Image (cartoon, rainbow, N blue to C red; front, top):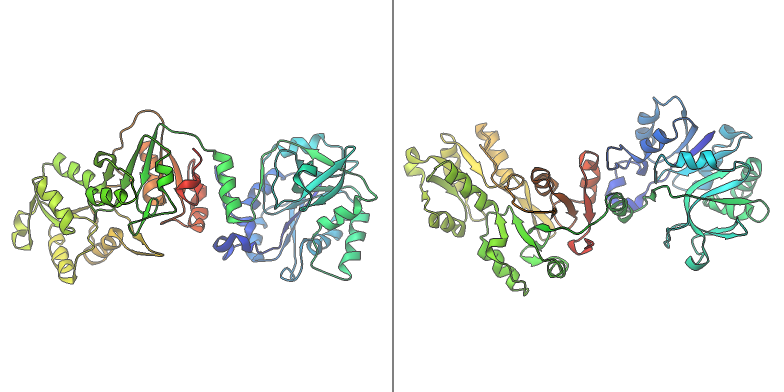
Length: 476
């Protein structure tokens, strides 16, 4: 059997994800590689022709080792649509019947059983009768045959959604109709041919329950991830603060709504420039009552570590408010003049230092070991990022070739809980890794550190994950 896969388009609605690669190279979850590689794996026993266009060299590098795959380049992809692309395949198809699949469709291997059991004597459209939306092509059925395909078909009149996967039995009629359209206009959708042919040829809907998803936008990508992994309720919610609930000390997108709809939650933060009391005050300003015991910060973890090691004499790189916390916990805060008595250097997120402070810090670390409350590289601030401890640690290594002995905060906090638990946060390097270390589920929010293109780049190596644009999109 022959299969045409349409991959000429830019996929501009995926924003930065497709700025540097074609849409079909979108990375998938759960061990799959890309959309294209998933399709090639499923249809490995088909003769495949891929229509290429945008950034075609990247696709060719992947398919060159597939013996069952050929390709044609649509050099006019900027000024044509998929009807023109399909027409480029007519010599490959000849008189044979064939399948057509859009390159932005995620589909699973069960589709092969559906193909095995379908009637190949009819033109067909693979149809999902349980899914409806405004974006996808819908089909109208009368007496078991499809009589129309269009986005504008009303949901109540529709028999289901086209899965953008078609089988063409009447090959010559199909290409003859395409040629009629292309004589006058090159920028047509191939579905127009199906719509016209339905007036004089029979098309059957191939109803099935195979999981599939068209990934045409960033929201599609998010929904695909969440459909695969699903949401559920938890006994415990651990919520990152900065970039997830707060940004520049202001509540993000009415995050208080989410907080008021859950009971058992604790707040997590690596931000060691603020005290728990400072966070409590910020939330109180929004009429959100937070118990100090329900805030877990990297300062707590650092103090626990120091006490465990029985270290009391430290050089502390911190804000004045954080310095008070260490003093109240009976630590001796020493200076450069007492360097011989310093047992360990402790670096927190210091937003008050000057260049002389850096000189003192480096002078001491040249002779002494140091630890950090966390290793976040950057911190969300308004609509951009500012340097965090990770940047400072990089500079220390570049100057002195020394790394911290330990990272005390996320992802190394010892979280205690009973029952099921989830961490919700904006940082894959800290919040996600903390979920792995604490054996909890994880949901990523896109309001802070991680952007959709960052997620897409890393998702193939992530375990189970949900994604929401804001925390209020988490389905309880």
